[in-house]
Length: 241
Ligand code: 8LK
Image (cartoon, rainbow, N blue to C red; front, side):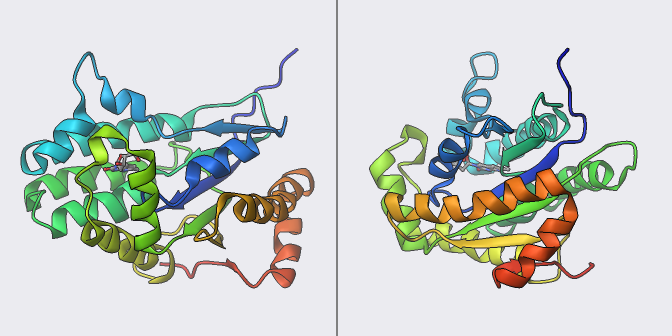
């Protein structure tokens, strides 16, 4: 009989566009205990034939609202998806959607105040309802210099992303920092910060180091996560907001 985990140990992988999330997710896929849930970019590119991602980049004033509304829904689906494995590794979250991407679009004038309010009202409802289980146990933050992120975006050359500027990446970087360390927004779990400016072989070595924390916490419960805090200065427990 298969075990279905309705409340797996849940790790969010967060970071700027081009911070190397895919390399991390691919690395962790080899562990039989871990279910990797990638960002549903394919859904954003093809909603019954509509490429909302492309529309958003081409005409952000017109399309940011429907795009972010759909992002919020599809990310919620990932949060609520039960797994057959005890650990769930999720690429981004409804938290980074609201506090980084939506916030940035609003501040840069791409979302109207009224549009922000609608998205926020949904977000507050989803995160504030006890009957909606958004369990998060750990956040892995891949901290990257915006220049490095831009270099990676240019190398991977994803069609919709050709117009991304350094300025946009700088704004998103700052919003990730403000969200995770600014004590202004909800941070749903302790944060591990990884310096993600290095090249792939070095990054993989880093991931190997952290796999013990992630799998250890799962096997032994939250206590081992607490114990590992003593060894790793990078784990930051958020203050209550
Ligand atoms: O991550 C894939 C692409 O989607 C990238 O170009 C950035 C964009 N994106 C966005 O605009 N808003 C988002 C996400 C990604 C993810 C969340 C949660 N919100």
